[in-house]
Image (tube, rainbow, N blue to C red):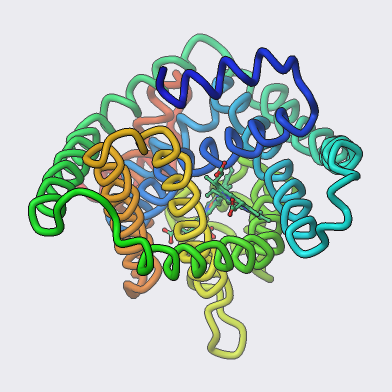
Amino acid sequence: MTSLALTVKETLRYRGAIGQWSWVLHRLTGVGVVLFLVLHVIDTSWAVFYPSLYVKAIAAYQSPIFTIGEFGLVFAVVYHAFNGIRIIIFDYKPALWRHQSRAALFVLGATLLLLAPVFVGMAGHVIDFYVTEAAIAGDHVLDVVLFSIIEQLPFIAGFLAVLAAAVVLAAAFTLLRGAGRKAAQSSAVERFWWAFMRVSGIAIVPLVFVHLALMHVVQGVFDITAAGEVAGTLANNGSIGAAPSAVEFVYHRWTFAAGGFFVWRTFDFFLLVLVVLHGFNGLRYVLTDYTSFNDFARRTSVALCTIVAAVLLAVGGAALFVPLEENIIHEAMAATAEIYELRGEEIPASLEAYLSDES
Ligand code: HEM
Ligand code: HEM
């Protein structure tokens, strides 16, 4: 039986001893957030490299299916963070181990306690949106989601190419180094990653909590448009373009500077590097646990995690470093008009005038 099947079977057989469940939940939440991160970093880079698609991707996120996912994501991040802190404390204080099950329950309790007011705040944004913009909740939701997903399909080819590259890399490695591992070398490397997971975990807590608080509670996912205030920038920026868009929201945040210092670009840079390295090393632990029976499968898992992490650091980093020009806001305008049309809403006169001037 593979170790994945064994994990599932044994977890169910123990019928939820709390230590076992907290291990499973830590693993599931970690992997869930990594998968989200892949989409999120690629999507975010479109604000700079492919503005029209960014507008459509964010419009799709503002639909009920993703709203449920958004609550799940926030739960996953908060639970994983609190449970991660518990793991770190227990690693350094083995005397506490006899309180394992009480600590696991405490983590769950603390997560729910923090999330209760956060979810009320997030639900407020959801209700506001559906009450004030009822048209979007109507028949056209699926149109926007499908339209956006179809346009994103070519990127699946990218994922397949990455998978193929991982297989080739694993095969090349096996040819060059032969089967098996060099124990001494790998244990020094593993000690580094063990410490890195703990240090990065602690450093990520303030970064990801501030990021989520700004996006979910202060701004609200439905207001990622720069129509009003843009969270984390001082001014009520108003709109530069003919209609506020999600691209403009990112533009305002990434060009916001205090004393010549780009606040959110720097913040996002540290967030990007830490979550990608922590998340993909964590994914490597998970995948290699289930592929350790076969050398080639294990190497393919390691290669896959390494390549995806490298691609995300390159693409996400490039988006943060290119100089931003206002033209990306203008490129987003045609896509904004398409979204209005799909939703069966009237295109604002200023946007219509802008587009007819363009053509
Ligand atoms: C649904 C929840 C989330 C929303 C709505 C959201 C929104 C955004 C937005 C609008 C940006 C653009 C840049 C900015 O304005 O600062 C951004 C960037 C970023 N977010 Fe999130 N975020 C969410 C969850 C997360 C989570 C859970 C993580 C970490 C695991 C994360 C990591 C990042 C990173 C690393 C960047 C920079 C990406 C790049 O360099 O291209 N976000 N996010
Ligand atoms: C918010 C702060 C965070 C803390 C305190 C934290 C802490 C930890 C700790 C202590 C571990 C165990 C490491 C080990 O077994 O040696 C871990 C594993 C992991 N983390 Fe995090 N983490 C955080 C955020 C994240 C984020 C944002 C992601 C996803 C991008 C993530 C993904 C993972 C994964 C996939 C694992 C491996 C799980 C397993 O082996 O079962 N973590 N984390």
